[in-house]
Length: 87
Image 1 (cartoon, rainbow, N blue to C red):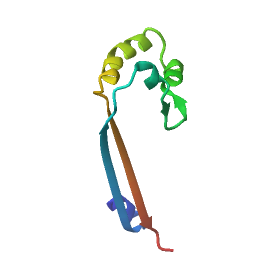
Image 2 (spheres, one colour):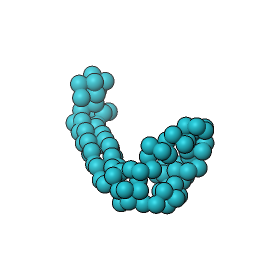
Image 3 (cartoon, rainbow, N blue to C red):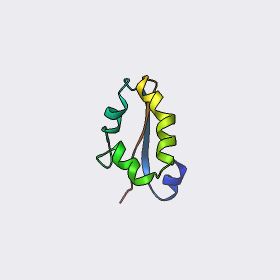
């Protein structure tokens, strides 16, 4: 917060939300068809773009049991910052 004060901001408020939630168990195909928030692209399409074989196979072998047995945990971290710079 001192950094914001040094450059002239006052009344600084920072709110941090850390959320975890357990995902339901899903068939692997259904999980792959799930859209990632940004960009709105299914996991399968995204992974085909960024991973090559054998990385995709290795990734699937590691993640698939977690997805299909309902042990996957989603973690969301969001920070909200508001401040005023007099003017």
